View 1 (cartoon, one colour):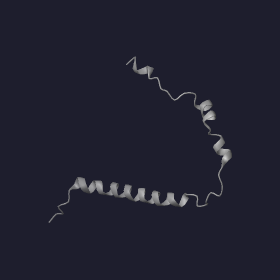
View 2 (cartoon, rainbow, N blue to C red):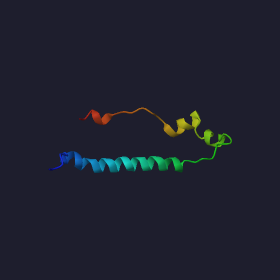
View 3 (spheres, rainbow, N blue to C red):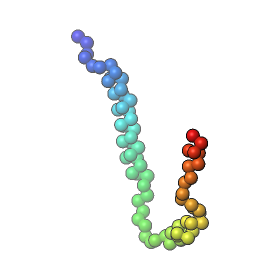
View 4 (cartoon, one colour):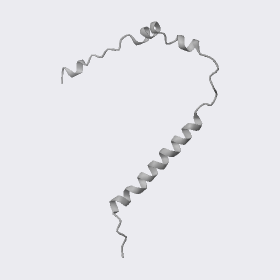
Length: 72
């Protein structure tokens, strides 16, 4: 007597199982890569690089003009 399994379902089982195992391995290994040293003081030098005045100089404008849509 033959096994009543669906061949299409059986062909999808291995790749799905492989994908699930791969995702689990990478998610657990990412936790190990995180730095475990606590922050002892504020980094004001780094924060000073992102003040609103300096960000205005870097970003210029946040508006978008979709002029390429006019020609479609």
